[in-house]
Amino acid sequence: MPRYKITIEYDGTKYCGWQRQPGQATVESVITEALKTAFSQDIEIFGSGRTDAGVHAVGQIAHFDCNKKLNGFEMMMAINHNIDYNENIAIIDCHEVSENFHSRFDAKMRFYEYKIINRKARLVLEKNRAWHIPNKLDLEKIQEASKYFIGTHDFSSFKDSECQTKNPIRTIKDIKITKNNDLILFQISAKSFLHHMVRNIVGTLYLIGKNKLEVEDISKILAAKNRTKSGPNAPACGLYFTKVEY
Amino acid sequence: MPRYKITIEYDGTKYCGWQRQPGQATVESVITEALKTAFSQDIEIFGSGRTDAGVHAVGQIAHFDCNKKLNGFEMMMAINHNIDYNENIAIIDCHEVSENFHSRFDAKMRFYEYKIINRKARLVLEKNRAWHIPNKLDLEKIQEASKYFIGTHDFSSFKDSECQTKNPIRTIKDIKITKNNDLILFQISAKSFLHHMVRNIVGTLYLIGKNKLEVEDISKILAAKNRTKSGPNAPACGLYFTKVEY
Figure (cartoon, chains in turn cyan, red):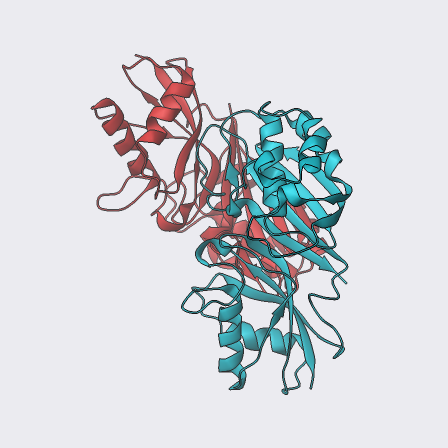
């Protein structure tokens, strides 16, 4: 049976995250319903990773099997055609892949971006699309502190208390933080992340930028392996799942 | 009486444009109402230019007089505080200016951007924020053709039939067209524009990119001074009023 790999864009604002949950609007359930309508069969889709309520994606990946043989473009259009226009979800790319391909287990690198708008005035075009921080942040200090996260560490201090993973060791390949007018953009990549890890890192760097923490504190917080030592969980609306490499 | 210059950002999707109209939601009316609530007086505001329904702004300028003396930051916050959070409008900058300053008559250069997303899949994050064109456009041809607009011309072929200006001569200082992934961004500047001029130029360049017109046709269309010779009025949702220079 052909296996298809899809790339998905969504505005997460009105969804209870990626994962299917009974009675809730989720990205996975909208796509599953579209597949059911298109092909009159129950098709299970497998996402490369879950995203929380309010988190966006421009490059979420999923795969599914379907006994209907279509080329990638036809499959993409068939699904999109069955997603209501009021939904904020689209399949933006689709290819048939080997039947051994697995969107989650084969992922070699995951890429996230986090947007802060650092200005006094409320957000308009970036409303629900970025974290609004009115007070000035010390960007250089944030950039310097971010380097302490790169490499392999025990990220227990940066995982959600409900995170079920037993192994808290993760390897961050890179963190890049750039500023363009009011926008502070965080770009972060790792093979995998713990639950809330990106948002907890951003929340901790926010405290650095506000001078509530010092650059050297990052090492101490990592060493503490205690979630209460790190910063707040940055709002979901600033987070974008941008790419998966296989 | 102090005169204030404000910079305004808005998502134009749900507004009937900038200008006040009885019984319609417009950007000007929302700000006027906020000023009335803040200062218990009728304050007239003067925009640097009108924008149509659905057109966005990140740098619209307006001025108004108010007998209340505040610094720019306080005035900005006072207005924003009285704009309902469900409105997609914010004052993003404010300064007291000379009582001779006029947002419209003193403008030396106006800057617009137009966004096309050129991809097969429907829009999600750019829904209502860009013109979605599924079929491939010839970018180089568009760029070449755009140069014909630069300079002083009679733009009768590119003005709306309801445009009331008697003088159709305008001087385009620059048009820059760049591509970044799916996004084709038009940046265009002139001291002033005719009604629908930017959107008619983009709509004509769209026909060039689709090979429905040739590069040299631009000269002929300009010479014709006839709106029926140019391309379609590009959708309002792709247009952004970005800056005014004084």
